[in-house]
Image (spheres, rainbow, N blue to C red):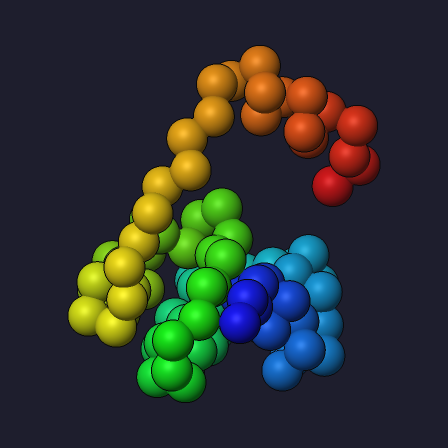
Length: 89
């Protein structure tokens, strides 16, 4: 099964990522993200997509290392720019 951690965070909080950042700041968002990731990794084998900043958080990274296998999908800067330049967020 596949699960997107950002979608799961939005589901459990009933707020968008942008709303969470605006209301609580990055530190609280990262704490919530860590708790959600820990729970997802205990739920059995699955593919978990993390948000862009998840892996820079040491606690989240330790949970991923302990409970899963991480894979970095690397893309060239021009490919990344093409993917995000039309977004308004």
